[in-house]
Image 1: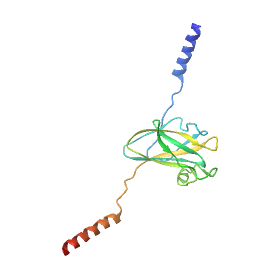
Image 2: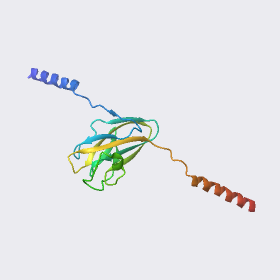
Image 3: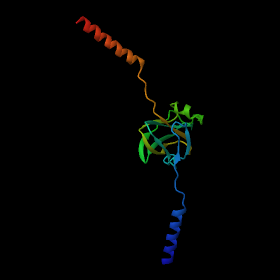
Image 4: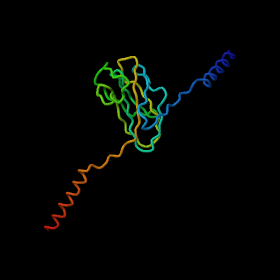
Length: 169
């Protein structure tokens, strides 16, 4: 029995050494859509995590594509960021037009605000009427929202009213 245990231990050790570890897939911030395939509901759809680093705030966008009807839960280092939206239809075809799918309520999509830092994005298929499919994600830096001109005009108007009231008083 002892030689069998040694052989088993040797085989287990060799398997651990020679098994292929999961590799991260680096993606470029502001680099466009990165596509991925997935299996049926309940399975991890990103076997190898997408990794990136943000130096400022960013936005992660995820969308189903090809045939509508799939929904995902997105994770960062194993911690849930949330679910994509419920699809508005099942079986509509859009192909690999990720931007159109993201902007169409028939396809599940999600937008996740991220702070500066390092990310390792994975996910699972929450719902799918199919045995697999395709989807995509992208990471963009968050754009600063400019102050609307109307707000500046409103402020000038208030100053004018204040000056007028002061002059009368």
